[in-house]
Image 1 (tube, rainbow, N blue to C red):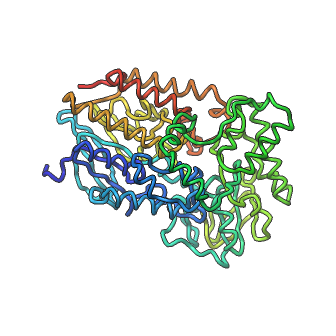
Image 2 (image 1 turned 30 degrees about the vertical axis):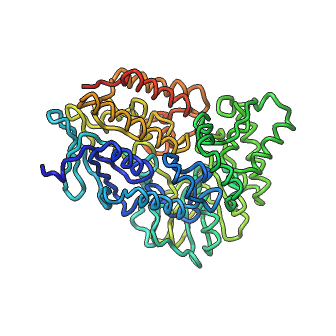
Image 3 (image 1 turned 135 degrees about the horizontal axis):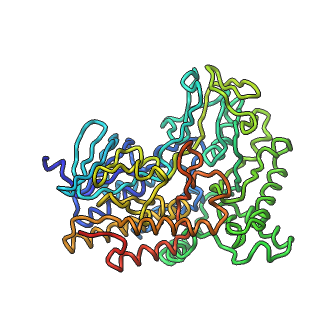
Length: 531
């Protein structure tokens, strides 16, 4: 191999995880390259350019904290940053820290094979290029493999098929067009109000309704911004001790311990304030079905107040518990169903039978449209990793190891796969925490780990199988104390993907997770084999 092929660290993915990992690896003096299939940085914010795409976490929190200068000098225009601005921020970070020179764009990794004799990973790209590296860091993202259901006849549609997770960079003008959109999850809920304003007719095909809370988005309050920036380190530290690493103003009272009037007042205040903090209205919404029902009935009541056609409102009211699927945040979503050019089609009771040349056919009728939008979500948490042919010790494939569900120690490492790290992998808080906070915590832990290996001349670190099994049990033990695992068919459990093993993948509780990670590191990387 030549010098260009030999690396210390290979990072797969140039989203927020990959960029920060590159920054930290450079600080360790390690020769590092990032491989990114897209043509730019930003990860999910590079690909998800659909109308209305924006973050559901407050802009002052959904940002890096590793550089105080970056925190102080960057200003967000809105309470919830839109996709173009987040992508602009990602590019600003890449330029500020001179990251682009070590990122290979338009480069899809097809295989990663570990060679026991050399203790190196062999990395093969789609173009047939070979690279060798001591360490691999998988920054492939939790929501980066699109889910495209196997609809019969999908290839026959003569119009354009779009997926919200791979939106054209130049966008699309739907003026005067009839649009069909399949799905009513987070992406659809953000896109539907804007597409409805353009299209002559919008047909929304819904299988399962989602709970959504108004965002109450607005221009950034400059006084609020100045206040946060004046005490940013304290603000961040306080958030890191919160359950989801978010400033969600949690209520320490049970929903069942207050009067009906007090309960309604709390829900009303949360509804008016908007956003994900609604889930923190009371302390037992995730663990007590009766408490959860008070929240679900409140939201259902709001839907029926807003939507004029009560048969449509009924279809939009979920029957599942609040929170077992990711709570959505919207701007005028339910109000959009009062428009004359918008129709809701129930495909739970009348399933889609096939996609036709001009539209689609359900068991109840046929529909025609010019554009078909698939807002069908992602193969979450594991999909992007399993798209790569990853082989560890004795040629064991990751796909085979995970055939009954993902097993991962701390969400960071997989037994049998030495020197391979996963950022926000299954078994870590990941999607149930502020993602950038979770990313930075993981990258910092990996960086400290590699520093430890270098200092003590270790060549290999690999998770112990027994420790991994114990961790999987711990993740599930905590999840089983909540309503989430059995509450509904969620991508948290892989239930949105046919034949995917059902297992609750995220770890619930950011502060306790961090304590586990710190304990492992303090105890000479307990649960790992170092050699």
